[in-house]
Image (cartoon, rainbow, N blue to C red; front, top):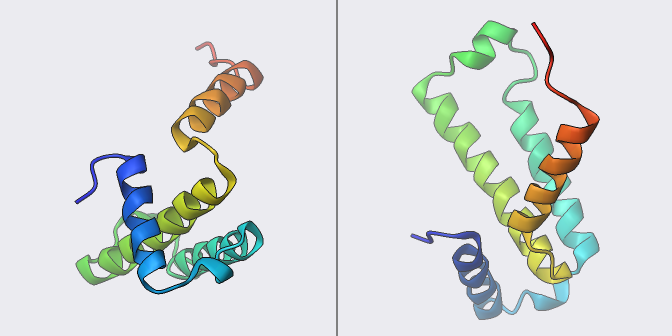
Length: 106
C-alpha cells in the first residue's frame, strides 16, 4: 500500500505502463476521466436528503469509497502528466483560501 502521493503516482505509472496506456493518458483525457468519475461519485448522493447522505449503509459507503478512489487516482495521474506537486498546490491553495475567506468572529 502506498504511503505517500509520490508512491501512489509511481504505482499508477507502473500500472499504466504495463498496459501500454500512455497514448491515452493525455492531460485532456485524464481531466475528462476525472470529471466522469466525480459525476459517478455524485450519483450515489443524487436523491438523498442531507441526513441520508451522512448516514450511508456499509454497502453504499464502500461504493462511494471506490468512486472517491477513482477520483483520487485520476487526479494523481493528471498531476504526474503535468508535473504538478499536488501537496504543494494544496498548501498554496489553502493559503489563498485563508486570505480570501478569513475566520468568522463569534
